[in-house]
Length: 337
Image (cartoon, rainbow, N blue to C red; front, side, top):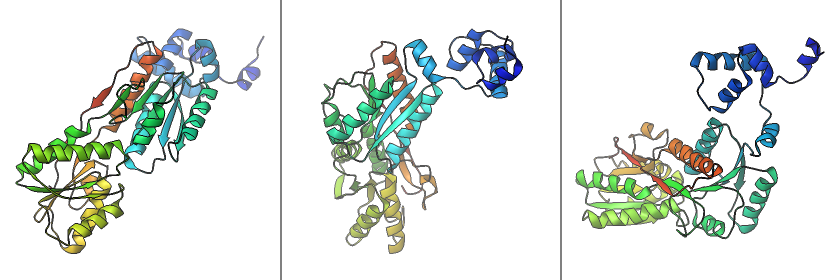
């Protein structure tokens, strides 16, 4: 017979939780997995019992019992930029909300060797599936060469080959740019310049293409275009350069950080926004509403993006097909335009 001292020496079990909460083992399982119907008051009793005894689920044993790992691998570029960093966080939160842990492989560059190493690492861990954050064209080119033995989902606004076997979710970049350019036209702007992002990034290519399309569709005039590197420092340099000549009516910056550098350069030159020139960014970073002046920008819903990616992956776990899906972007009008 097991005495109380031996029971306290072993890790708390699901049976202990059930005994304390006065429910069945199956009810505890439903609460832990967020499956089935559980009365709110019963759920609260189970959660209180879990907290009381410090129960932690043994994921290794669970994976053996269900023949399915509860770990999702995430391959991402180094995430110093706002977009990839926000995407990574949203995927991790969505995975955790669905009861999955994550393992992250951050690659300094998307070379075949680095990709193969990351994939081998995840397969060695027995991950259930892989989320691929793919912002650059080189990454998509390399991934199209791989045949993945586990379900996968790519997060990208575009793709090198639409024939890729990896389903994709992303943000529909062109619609957001079109909304921004239409707003500028309605504000009376005729000449619109573009501070573009790096030409190897899908988002930069999509936003630049949409800028060209809007110039033509709305009968606008293309001002000077400068290609940057997503940083505020480059935005500052581009704005300093453009201020040496006749200013355009407006500038569409491909991200908020380059817009931030633009604001600083114009402030030093005594150029007033929106009186002398209007400015629109992209991303809607948390701080963009507190720039001076507050930044008109295009918002990407990174939280929804993460949940859509994880949901698409889990559907594949259950034998369902996951198609490509692009989420809408939304213009946020503030003082700069």
